[in-house]
Each structure stands twice: as C-alpha cells, then as structure tokens.
Length: 256
Image 1 (cartoon, rainbow, N blue to C red):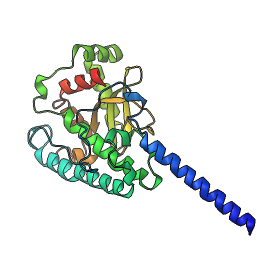
Image 2: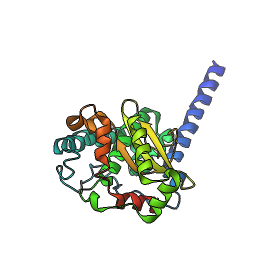
Image 3: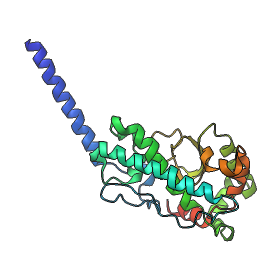
Image 4: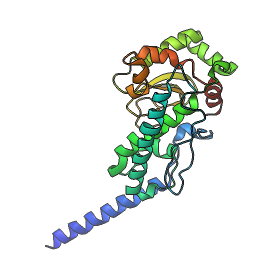
C-alpha cells in the first residue's frame, strides 16, 4: 500500500513537472531560428482578443481574371480560408495558453504544441498561414512587376535562366501528389531552393522535411483551380505566372 502511494506521488510529481516544462516552452515560443533577426511576413496580423481573423484581400474577387476566376477566388477565400481560421480559433480555445501567440510562432513550433490540439494547429494554422501568404503574393498589377536585380541574379545563378526556373518550379508543382503546395524558399544560408509540402504543411514548420523561408508558393489543392481548369493542373500553373507580384516576392527575398 505504501509503495503504491509512493508510486502515485512520484507519478503526480512527474506529470506536474512535465506540465510546467510544457508551459515554459509555450511561454518562450519564438518564430524559429530561420527568422532570427529578420522581419515578419507583412500579411501576419496579430490575433484580436486572442482570435485570428480572415485577412483583408487587397483586390476584388474578379481582379485576377482571366487567370483565376472570380467564383474560385470567392469560394477559396470566403469558404476554405475562413474555415481554417475558424478551426484554428476553436483549437486555441481548447488550449488557452496559446492565446496571444503569433501565427508564425504557432506554425513554426508544431512540436511544442499541446498534443490535444497539435494536429489542428498544423492543419488549420498551416492553412491560415499558407493562404494569407498566397493572397499577398498575387496582384492584378502583376504584369507590371519584375523580379528585383538581386532576386533575378540569384535565380539565374541557381537555374541559369528565368525560363529554366519557371520550368523547374512548374515541374515541382505538377509533381505534388494529391493536395499540397510548391514553394520557392531560402535556406539558412539564403540559398534558393524548391520545396513541396503535403496538405497545409509549410516550409516554416519545424516538422517540415525541408525547412526554409518561403518567398513564393502555389496552392495545388484542387479547390484552388478546379472550377476553371478542371483536372488540368499544368494549365493552372501556367496561368499563375500572370498573377505573381514580383515586387512582393522580391521584398520577401530581401527582408526575410
């Protein structure tokens, strides 16, 4: 009986210690070492009263036509993205110790998330981050934008030409099996690389197979293109080049 009580006490103390460590980790979350000394993404709005909100679009639903149609934009933004925001807030309600943390702090520290909400933060936090990034990346004035001299030089040093880069990026995006994303990102040494992630995973996540700082990305979930392009993902990717705001990509390249 005495041994049983002793074991129970040790178990209780151990659980308490682990909980304290967990709280300490959460209190000290940082937007991982990739972002040390760099600015945050300019789409990332702080949570309002502990809750995240759908970011405001900088353009109308039909502004990216004929390359991305208005109906797809409206459904993608107001339904799909809104669901990610709603589900993320529901997860945070279950783990109030996460309230006040930035989106980047959450999604770049998936392993530190409480077990009961870890998958929800990964899926819905990732969905919120990725789509907020995606909307900011595109512009109706894209045709008037060009990569900065520094970005163009870096791309050509890696892939010899912009055309070769576009071909490799398209190959990467086309090759994503099922749902996911394709990214142009920088590694710790600021070298450019192409990354693909499944579902709503992102290169910023500590669980990513390849981690990096994304500066461009394309959503290749079918909901991003099926109304207009049906099963022709390659056509959607080809149209995507017409809406990329290279000024924004260049800004992230220089600042992140």
